[in-house]
Image (cartoon, rainbow, N blue to C red; front, side, top):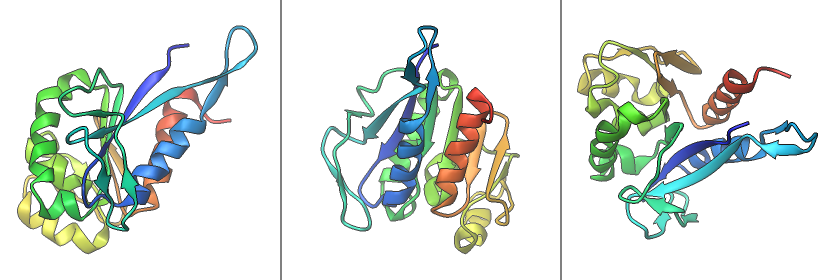
Length: 184
């Protein structure tokens, strides 16, 4: 079985649980190999805007495994939400990087306000998306080509996934794992 690479983008102002929740879910997923031993299904990589550590909204500090410039091929990319994606230049840096790399990534997801870093790429135009209910009206206003449903826990539209609030990040990760490996 091939181990799939999951990239999670870390940046100053990220919502820690949006990053940690999916990271933990993917990190513990295992399957039985041909030799009968349990093997990891995924390799989780935290990708920083640079190689430097970033600070979550809560103050937790994340040290990335790699940077946007050095990141290798990914199967899945998850853009966590947070104040930084919404209100700083981090969102634009992430959007530019995603726009360049999207064709080589099987599936791309945003969690909560991570949509502010994915929507500017135009990749979500005309698609059904969700975000935290508190930001739904702003997302609709800023990105009028998106079909926003703030009541959904998470939505899939083509190779793109969007999730609502913080804990929806874990539900989304579990659904992606089930999509890859089936339910148990």
